[in-house]
Length: 505
Ligand SMILES: [Ca+2]
Ligand SMILES: [Ca+2]
Ligand SMILES: [Ca+2]
Image 1 (cartoon, rainbow, N blue to C red):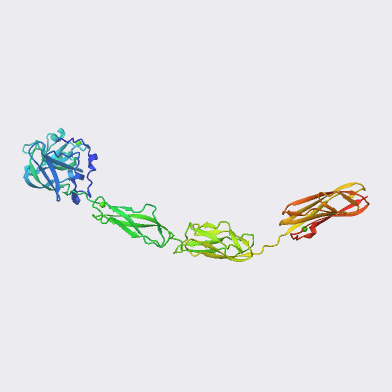
Image 2 (tube, rainbow, N blue to C red; image 1 turned 180 degrees about the vertical axis):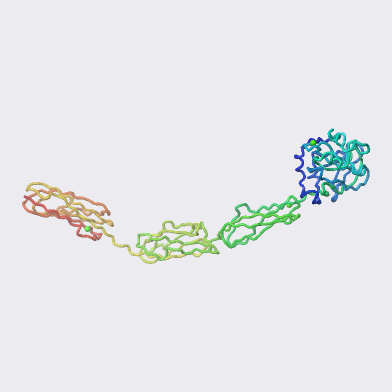
């Protein structure tokens, strides 16, 4: 035995996970997969020894009688020696020697193996012996030291259990050799109440892997289209029963969706995954007027509400990001658009602001989407209301002058709106008791000063004229200032004249 028993049990015990280890009370059929379950750190199969799974058995053989003729393999146990019963090998011998049962035992329960109990019923019945390499306390504590067994230190398992009540079996297995030529089939190992047969296949206990054929969060599929959501199926165990699985996509409504796809492997394990996809609106199928038709607006002004049209697909779903071109008649009653090339929003709506232009009357505009019948809308241009400008005149000047004295008058004309006053004519009339000495740019006709027509006076603006006079005759007089637009009606003419009194002494 070349193995170091000091190898820690915990490191290798995980190599074999029993499907069900309820204890000897519930004996079970177990399967050993050598490639998975034989504990590699314990293996002592040498160069000219070999094993292979044949059916549910393990064919073992050695080719000669040298030291390399040995087949010895172990499985993790970790159970009390007290409970393992009478382990045995179910072996069909073809030729030569037969294997013995091997129990790697931690006799003092300190976690470290101390020796191997060997059972060779063909030679010694139910007598189990330990080799000379076992620890001294094991050999000393052997139930019997009588001759006639495999070594001087031996006994029945019950005897060993009585001597070492806390002993634990860390590994169990079999050994043929070394130096023994043999050939046969190990049909089964009976241990701890269970019967272990062999298989060269690791049992497949996990379902296949499904990979959605489309990445998260999924592809976009068109409303109303026919589409399959698929998943690729792989299984590195028993293999898949179908390479792909699929389900029809639900394209009857918009939005994010998912479908659960399931698949099975050959061993019957199944698994599933959620495949996500998103349904979006289809191609534009119609453009219709939403609002804004039927409005009226004076020529030159914007219609109060924008004209809105909606683009939908065949299912009536709004289609976003569709270019819409608005158009109006080239002449006559028509309109202009703030931006005639619009694009639908997420609600499928494109809107445009329209200004009435050209002549009065009802006209028809169109919203056009390539390939679709345009949506039309009617708008009415009404006559622009007359302009109005309320001019207000104020006049300042001296209330008294003595003969020979000069005075200054300031005429202020203010446009109180709302529109621009066009062609504003202003004048200032003086009594005969004064003579005009400076007209402030105006033209004098007798004692009347008239200024050149002012082309326009914007709403809120004002203009002033300054005239100087000299008193020439005693008396009480009035000075009158006036202004009027020759083109723009004034709704309050009373404010267009201003008078101020003058006494000359
Ligand atoms: Ca020990
Ligand atoms: Ca599988
Ligand atoms: Ca006025």
